[in-house]
Each structure stands twice: as structure tokens, then as C-alpha cells.
Image (cartoon, rainbow, N blue to C red; front, side, top):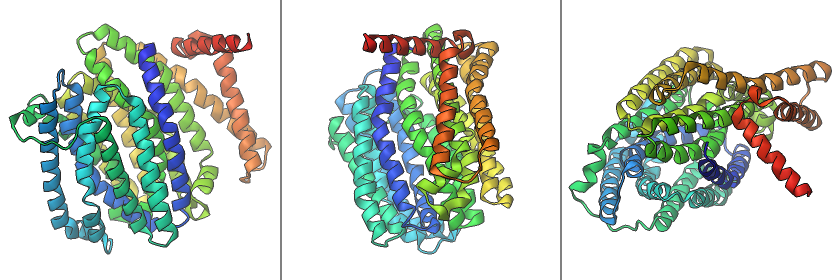
Length: 486
């Protein structure tokens, strides 16, 4: 990974750390004032509205990022087309809201969807504006917008309303406020404005593959929402609430790392699509750095899921412990496939991306449907298997595009697996020596010991074992430490 790309990625992730804190804080507060059933209503609403968000991002956002030259008239016409489509979708949502309510069998869900439908317009504005910010590499601004919108929508709107007893209405009102703030700030900083044009140039994204990328994003929405839809339809609002909160914890990590990674790497691979050698070096370097990190985070959360659920959600959510463990056990795949997707989308392989998303959606729905007979945990296992299958497929096609050898890919994974195995062995050893009651002191001891073992591996093992990327980072850390000591 080049220093510039690594720097951009770190800037975007660092700017999102505060957003993570806000998300975790709001999750911890809201889970104590809103019932699992209330979160089921929120999940079914966000699933429905997420369909429109995926369409805008794919049909308009990706097209603007990939486009070589963009002028103000093209931005205005694209925004005009996006808002026109948004208004059409709002109308359809209001008409079909009772049908959606009937599908889920959640009393009053139709009114919630009608109330929240204005979010679609905000998402249309945001998709176009955010694409411009990505083109201009304004990653600090993107992170700041995410932070401010989450503070405004979650902490200042949802939390007070939830404390006042508004249950799921507090959640959807905060969702709407977050979208409004996000759209306003991104539109302002991207200098897009609301000057709309309606001409044939707005169809350029579709002619250049935007239509297929839009389809790909819709399929991605179907894949990621499939498990939630199955949970709501087969098990009811309470089960959907339990599952969706577990998925939300996973999504906090994904939005803090995977989403910034996609925003940084997709333009990079798009610019390198005619230089296979450089693109391959960039990909292998990024995987060598990120794959071990994702494996470590997922393993540690899975090992400490009981404590994490009690602290963040409370003892009323203990049924979510095993769900969180299962979902985080495949975090490395959930995040790494975004890097692989960045290669496929950046190289303009819209048909390949759409085909892979179709397979992902089918495996997600069939896997979770089969698992639903075993309750929420069965749905989590079905979703995890689908994630692993999709990761293997996207990795295969990304490697094909970049002419990466099988041995290179195998080495990356063998090096990455050293860290989670060490953490797991350390955890199991401590569990045998110390009583298994959940106490803060015990969790601190476990985490400190596991962290010490992982740090020792990073410091002591040779570069041939941990990989050249981590070895390079280690040299930089040592050099900086020596400068500070001097």
C-alpha cells in the first residue's frame, strides 16, 4: 500500500473514530429505553429505505466517482435525475406502505414507513454530493459530516425522545434527522447546490455502466438485508430486533473501517485499471496490512461478546451474545470483500459485480431461511456462511483481474491467521485458570494478556512470518519511538 493511500485511509478511519464513539454511546443508551420489538420496527424501516439508498449510490454515486471529467452542468443534471427518481420512490413507498406492513405483520409499520419516506430525498442529495467529495479526496470532510450527522440525529434527537418513552418513533425520527443533516452538509461542502437540470447528460452514468452498478448496489442491499428480512418475516419483530442490534454492532466496525476503505480504494483501483502491475502491488500490500487487523478485531469481539453485550445493550439482550460471536467470527471476510469489490468495481466489471451480488443474495436468503428453524442463532450462522462464500468469490475474481498467484493469496491468509489463533489459545488458557464469571477485572486481565501476546508476536516474529507489510509498519513504529526517545 502506497504511503499516500495509507495516509488517506488512516485519515478517514481516524475521523470516524469519534463517530464510532457516538454510535456506541447511542446504542448503549437506546437499548435501555427501547424494546427489542421497537428495534425490529426500525430495522424493517431501514431495510425498506435502504433499497433507495443503494440505487442512488450505484446508479449516480459510483458513476460520478469513476467518470474522468465532471463539470457543473453534469452534476446539476445528475442531481436533478436523482431527486426526480427520489420523489417517485417516495410516492411508491406511501402507496405500498400498507403492503409492506402486511408482509412483516408488524402493526403500525405502514405509518412509520410513510413518515420516514422523506429520507429518500435526502439520500439522493447525499449520494451525488458525497461522490464529489470522494473525487476531490476530501476524506476529512466526509468523516466530519458522518460525525456531526450522527451526533445531531442520534444523541440530540433519538436519545431524548427514547427517554421520553416514544419507543420506535424516537428511532425513526433520529434516522430522518441524521439523513437531513448529512445531505445538507455534504451538499454544502461539495458546492453542489440545488440548481437542477434535466437533460440527456444525466443518463451518462447508465450508458457508462451506471445502470449495472445501480443494479449491483440493489443486489448488495438485497444480500445484506436478506438475513434481516428473513428474521422479521419468520421470527417476528422481537427476534428481528435482537438480530438487527447484533448486526448493528458489526456494522459499527464495518462503517468505521470497511466503508472508508471502499471510499479510498475504489478510486485508486479505478485510476490503476490500465496498470495491472501497480494495481496488484497495491492490492497485495493492502491485504497484507488489513487482513490481520480485521482477523484480530473479529476474534477479540467474538471472545468477549458476553461482556460487550452486557455493557452496550444490557442484561435484557443476553440472547444476542451468541449471535454477536458468530457474526464477528467472519468479520475479516465481511471487511476484506470490500477491498476485493473495490478492485472489481474500480476496473469497471459491472456485470461480474452484479453476478457475484446475485449469488451473495441467493446464498444469504437460502442460508438464513434454512437456519431460521433454529432461531436467531441459526440465522446468524446462515448469514456468516453466505459472507464467507461471497468473500471467496470476490477474492477469486479480484485475483484474476490482477493476475495474483494462488500462493500469494494463501500466504496472506496464513500470516493473518497467526494472530487470532494466538488470541484464542491465550483466552482458553486463561479461562481454564480463572473462574468464568463475567467481571470487569477479569475482562481487563483477559484483554491485557491477549493484547500483550499479540504485541509480542508483532514485535518478535521475523518479517517472513508476519509479512513484509506488517514488518514495514513495525520498522516505522520503532523509528518513531527512537526519535521520540532522542
